[in-house]
Image (cartoon, rainbow, N blue to C red; front, side):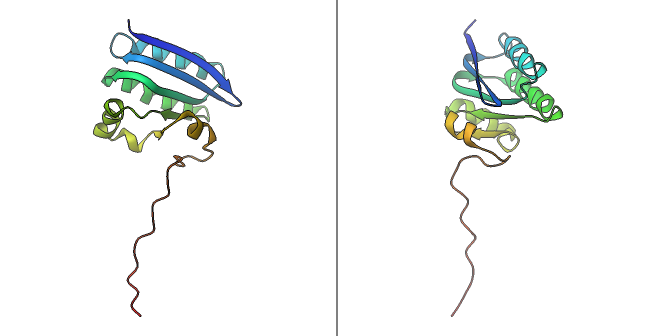
Length: 131
């Protein structure tokens, strides 16, 4: 099994760092560790996928399910990751619009409002002003 899971508390948020492959074999362990945090009252989660080398639909399903549970408990789940192979899975499924995905842990921890993804703001649309 190629999976590593660590956790650390950062104030009110819990960071769960995942590494390796998240697939049909390892996803149950990810589910278990995330559920432990949520059921212990640590529902503001940051899941760091920076060291994830592979993510399949089973792993994606676990993340979606834990996001829903965290939200029902007044929490949130932010993701961290830049690996093209992993981010492509979110983009293809449209889940990049559901999850807040940050380029690094610092940006995820600093974000205060849902939707504030630590990225440059979208420039305003050009106006047609003549004259």
